[in-house]
Image 1: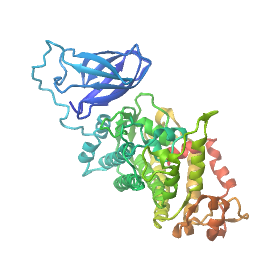
Image 2: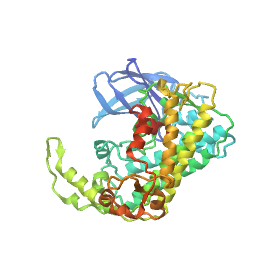
Image 3: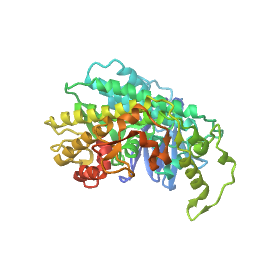
Image 4: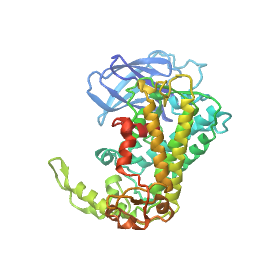
Length: 493
């Protein structure tokens, strides 16, 4: 019963409809609040699930047995069972049902969808990659790039869970870069040992996925296309269990400050402007990964690996220390370990070319952001836009003004100047008219010594006199956004 779409349709209009696809064992996991739900298996109603006597289940797991006919015939018996605070709903064909009848319906593992939205709704990322592997037009190229990115996201998130990632610390710290996209998964009894090489391999794999997507979407030209996607209906396998149960909107909320959809339809018709936007976003993420991978993080691992992973190897010395009570909401041991982590931020450069590639990727982001706005401003329609022009409407009714676009163009110019060395990066200890030449820094990168970077002496070889991109400049650049510059920048890259 793999690949079957299972829906819990709530009787209460205030509750959200839950949907996911069964894995190879016929199991699907859905989060369910209290209430009565109509259980659908694909297009057939198979019964009513009564959850009115529970307050909130961490997970609602529905098991569709292999001997249940497809599509389900009659009204199968639904048997709830609570095990370790998890609600299991077992479905079996009731006695006297038509279990011996033969159905001519298409099996659940039959022909895959033919459009991006269909592959994303059903969580069939790998089949979608195969379907669009030889793209014939811009719509195919855009679709393939989206699937390549999401394949990388699923692999990274599932891989981190497989390494025993501790999502509790990430939640306490407000979301670490890239780690915030990892969906929590139930802990395993025996956590595997995880090494720095294991973690680096996942980051490198994610970078490779983004590089593939970047190459794919960069081939999209000015020939018009549209690809419709309902963002609110997309589910991903972020836990690594083979079940696409996590909403894509949760990832967008965590990584891009997008407003939560709360289960509603979020229809977007992506076009050429959005293709340039997506290309720019892959450049941004690739650049961030290049910075991370350019340094040897072993000193940080030696102090903090136990804060991020359940069973690090080698384990930091602090693992053997006594646990301290939490006083006044403060964990003294955690605070001490975080201070030690900051102290350990004195990292050797392991890939001298990494910062140069990062700078080039950021410049690629700048170029594609300009291209996306060139295409967006040339549009004459208003058709479910992702990034709207001043005459269009974006998701959730969002509007963008001409002043914001003009301000963003000025920001891109300033950022490009800093990345190329034409403008100097400020430092709090330098004289007026002095700054750091980023172009020289990436050509001969220094150790990442946080204390000496803050103090300034580690950056002394890169100090020059010239036009500085100072605080006053950036205050003037961000003024058109009325305090919302960060959210705007995250959205439009």
